[in-house]
Image (cartoon, rainbow over all chains, first blue to last red; front, side, top):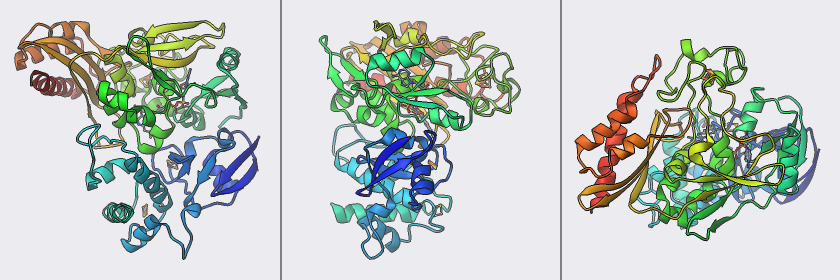
Length: 168
Length: 328
Ligand SMILES: Cc1cc2nc3c(=O)[nH]c(=O)nc-3n(C[C@H](O)[C@H](O)[C@H](O)COP(=O)(O)OP(=O)(O)OC[C@H]3O[C@@H](n4cnc5c(N)ncnc54)[C@H](O)[C@@H]3O)c2cc1C
Ligand code: SF4
Ligand code: FES
Ligand code: FES
């Protein structure tokens, strides 16, 4: 299967079996190992990447279905010395212990803050159409697709709140 | 995962022709790939419909809404007409899965996610749905998640969708294109089949059928809500959920439409329970009578007897809230 993926702005031509998940394509074929594999079944969020502006689980989609798509991984959000606001906030607030879930948390939070900006309500929003404050309950609900085995949740929420305030 | 041929559909006719030949349709892939990884589903060919022009949400001539099958759960929940005119649908979608999954999950795929239980995923156990005739591991096993209504002695799995429950209460209609090119419309009330002796057959769809859209009728009167009770506050399937709409007629209930999730092999609705509400005062006695009717035939399994009182309480709480809001 020939597939063209634009990853972090660079086009890549992938030649892989149709069974290859987007996650395995990134990690095993393109050597972009920042994106992590936890459950491989859409349950943990470690594999979260941003495709055409939306966060998705890279483990539950086929690379060949993304021919022509624009993909952003943790490597594309920022690099040492040039961290994205969320990456810097995770360092500042110690938003991890082992760090395994962190790339997924940061990719997820990056796209989540855009969803908030676009006015998307969540399950805990008081109403579906009014203004919404990014409370800790909102952050927790909107990030519930990202599990942290080390339970660094309080610091993850602090980091996201901080980055959101800087952005706003 | 077993290997398969990958076909990218160029139009709806191509997709349904390939499906008629035996290819399995893939949309968001979040249910199908999950099952293919475990070799619970082993298609020889996949036909990818994600490039088809089925992503629109558009007003219908009679004031309803036509939702293209490829509209994602995230986009549908955020759509302003859905938020204002069909709020229980936005609420149901937002109560389901995670932000990442909702960005991938599609309208048709959500309706067609398999009615299932954990034994269905475990190829080492008997399961009449996965391997017809082998038996049902749940009958002797853990049954916390299973159905209390509508099951059979062959299968007691629940349909896990939140979206479908709201659509059932909203009287949605499924638009289907067959491989002959013919389009037909099936009300969601007739779309799902109870397990009976053939739990592997879950809907009225025939080989080669492609869902192209779901159509909602014009917004109905009254107030509506979706309430989901689950083991965690987020990112868990429903133990019980209630999609409800109530319109008052003076101090009596004028209209009631109530659907339930988490308790049956399909989004559940009980016309007798609804009829017991209409024309009655909005009192706890009225609500309790509706719950009695709904649950009269409940048949809990070993571990899920709690769903009977839980459904009752969730229904009464939902009706109390909706009637209060509808009256004010
Ligand atoms: C970890 C996890 C948690 C979840 N939690 C919830 C939850 O809380 N609530 C909830 O409601 N759901 C939940 N889900 C399920 C999720 O909503 C479904 O997986 C999703 O909606 C399926 O949509 P899809 O487009 O990805 O379907 P796919 O996986 O692409 O397809 C599913 C089925 O539908 C068929 N199909 C798809 N589109 C069409 C079409 N147009 N015509 C004919 N056939 C078609 C496919 O052949 C396949 O059999 C969860 C899933 C996961 C993995
Ligand atoms: S309840 Fe249904 S899906 Fe679950 S093991 Fe029994 S037959 Fe299979
Ligand atoms: S690895 Fe994709 S969600 Fe866990
Ligand atoms: S930091 Fe270890 S899993 Fe989250």
